[in-house]
Image (spheres, rainbow, N blue to C red):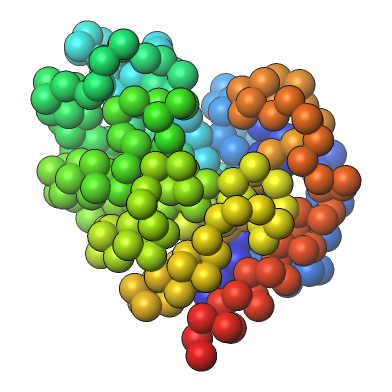
Length: 284
């Protein structure tokens, strides 16, 4: 098992102000951090981060989202072109800090709804967009892990089954999928069953409680989750994803309207301990 911590708990753009957090994450024994890539205007902050991570011996993954202006399933070809270009720029930023994979709901625009379910035409647009994006990903050496979200945040891919169908249609080794316990808690009938259904395509996993707080303190069926992962043979990162109210814009985007934990430290200290305990128990 490899462990990671998503830095969205603190920021949408990592700078030298977050060096102390990186130090703490390393000291606790995490293997990696997950870096948000939202501001792609300047490579310099990512290059600086890369040097810092290398000095600490921390690996890195990355997360981003898509908007209406670069929606991969848009009926407008120029917007789909913008999606390919944006994903390539995001991965260029990722290269600057040694990113191994890029995850997130990159298949479609977050928070943008059509008023109906996904269409066959949108599916085909998405497949064509990601076949192009995957070629760029391979050239940059960064795998894409497509994340399905719950129906309240997105409408295109909201289940493991839909996401498996999508990545199989893209049919490219640099376009796979990720699994998130939070979204699965809402959309799936069971954690273990869902994990088994997408095991062959899953290259990344988010460990996230049902209220986005400290893992292990809520209603997610963690025995099923860790047991299912263990049985599937998963050997990638288990990355904690939680959100707080430190950044008003991020809190609004993630719908965090109240404090979910007394202090951010509880998320990654208790969360790491919980993951290790659960993984060890699942091995027995």
